[in-house]
Image (cartoon, rainbow, N blue to C red; front, side, top):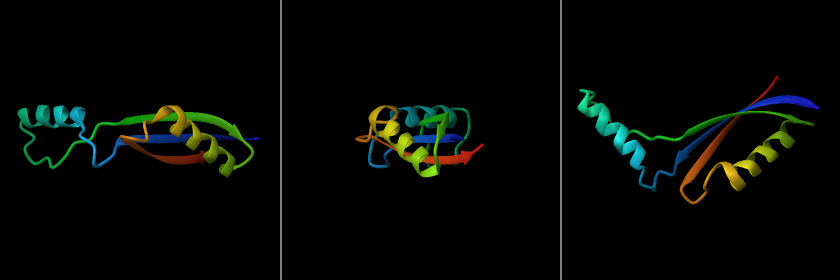
Length: 84
């Protein structure tokens, strides 16, 4: 088996209201950061995993994202898979 490190970025869908992003943007604007167009707040997860190959690793992590780590109704995710 091979060792992989998977970086998972989970962000709100563009069509979904992002109240945390709005709060961060308002706070930054109150501090004088006036050139902001948009702020989105999400999650960043790093998982170390053993798998036979990259395809198996990707399939396991996608299932974890869809079953538990993200809410597909309001979030999307992207993966970066690196073999160690």
